[in-house]
Length: 217
Length: 219
Image 1 (cartoon, rainbow over the protein chains, first blue to last red):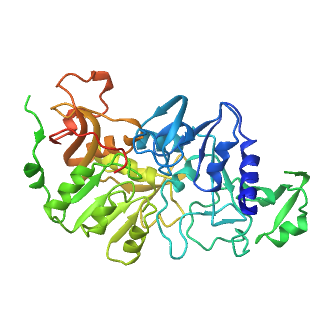
Image 2 (tube, helix red, strand yellow):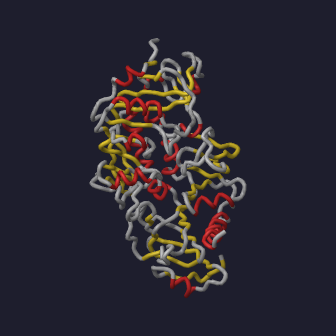
Image 3 (spheres, each protein chain N blue to C red):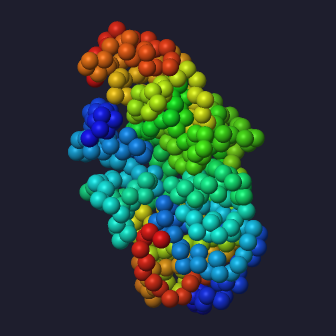
């Protein structure tokens, strides 16, 4: 496993520890989907293509499997799972029935603007991401702290097309956890062992407050 | 009851230049791929596509569409290339909004008010209305000249069931077409599907491609 892979697993494990039996969550592609590997029994995963109770994905593509997730991968189901049409699926999202969505990002801003669907040269469409951040109350961004070239992904203002304005509640990276408020900005809530506040400031493109109850991740 | 089963020729004759075509399916699952074959064979051009994503990729690549209304292009690099080339007009719509615009078209509504996409590129010049103190954006309903649907089971009347997540957009797209054509994996006798298990009542179906054929979900 590369360092980046290990870091992403660390992020996923951290987020998974926040969910408990009875919670219903939606996981985006990329780092978020790794969260599924660590959640406790009884947490239900929704997939916006029309599935509640997503289980383990198959190894590889299985053209005969009747169930697949939003990324197009064939998946097993959990006990008690249900399948429904696309309107019902986004209906439960808009209605606020899903506790939390975990999404990746290209950029996330000080006041919780999220950009995760388009960047120069790649403009595939927003899919269901705008619906998710609008309809679901708790939006967690799971992301590498910086881009591959070392640029901060947490910025003062997003430069890329937005997924939603002021919609993000939490940012979890391999270095730190921030609480995000669309009025008060960023607060550093916890950090990883071996990382200090100065190191986080250096790699973060926006100002942040430090919680008086700062803890280890 | 007159059977709605049709042969290829009859279906081919329904496709014409300039039509708006809706297709069920998502991420290459639950797509009516045999009806795609017929659409290609018909030679119709300058079409508009309405679909959740660009799963009808081969139609796109063959140049059937002048315009596509979708939520996501999928991961096919050729789709992105084609869309970036400017040869096709692309209208992106958030997936939940798109689904509901199709549903609205299918149930005779003029449009819907949504919060999704306000303050993003999805907001263009739509009317904004304050409802219970919150801004909502008006989105028009979508209908199609022809809807192409993939079902698991049908009878002669077009009562439909769907299987697994191949259901996705198929039931709403079945309702939104002025002419709805169905491809089914399995035929059963009229009256054989339990009324309680019918997802799409046959009243929404106009034509059924005869010859059942079980195909993979991914196509």
